[in-house]
Length: 420
Image (cartoon, rainbow, N blue to C red; front, side, top):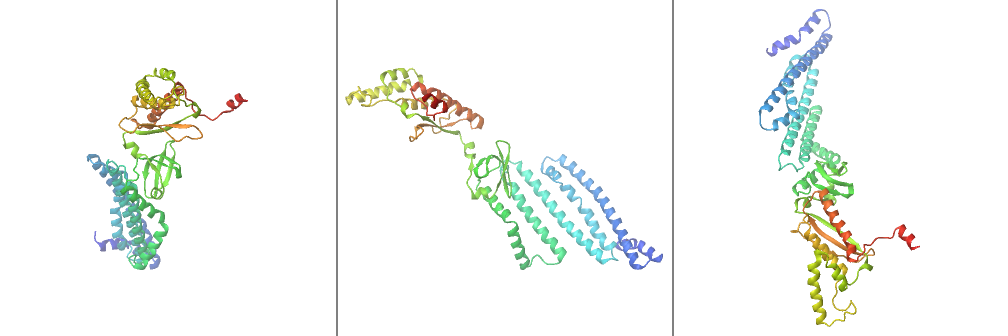
């Protein structure tokens, strides 16, 4: 059916109404309204039929292919948006033909069709971006990358181009003029300041590998302590260990300090670093009777025997007067306990012996002398790590009385009553 035939059919109602005595203006108006109803109903029905055909065909095609990219296209409504293209093209060509008697209506409808085509293009582009993001997240190399940030940046750019194009369609002003671009740039910088900062931050986070999805981070400023579940243009989402969620501005990862536990997760062990506070008045030199008693503890018997020989030899050479224990060399109960703790860690299969291990004194405090345990557990899983740490200190705390040592503890109400 050619253009002249379509124009002839579009004016049948108008000619009929004029023949019945109606004025030309009213005949044209009624003819335009009826043609609008017929065209839009027809295009609407065609859109429904064509959309259903495209969607079903695309689903059937995606089910037969091995790749998952087309499956993500289906989920992101890509076939649905593409199905609108043919009805839009048909409408585009019918408008100038059917509404030839009404140039104003023709221009309005063509502008509306162009605006719809711009919006449709943006939605098609968005569905492709989302499908690409979901497809790449299946790949191990991209799973921990902030793909959402890149998608959001490209969508902002796409919507910006689309909005400028729509403004040009509505106003007729060219968006490529320097004045327009300058004003638009100022508006964009003002409105999207946080977004631009987030974009820059997300690039730095990705390039410098500061944070990945799945990292355990602690960000005290925002009360975040858990695993990163999402990194997008404006925010980083953290699922805390109490199953609450904390949202952190992406730019804060660059501007502020936070703790990333990835190094621990990728290492060969998780650090144990905790101190026991010993009451200073309980520390004393060991007598021969004390040493004989402590030799019954199997872990330190070899050390005590070896150390006893060295001390005795030195004291004989220096003719130390041992009527007082302070003369010459002597062993202390705290020193022997330190060696016991070191031997206990060396015998503990849960401790990684290939990493640094130490039992040390810290500077005396008003709460006693801290004896710090510094080592690494094989198991890095939080729950197991806490069990290992608790088992170590349970044993050491219970072992302290065997060395005539006391743990420092602030007096309680019961202690004060006992003194009174």
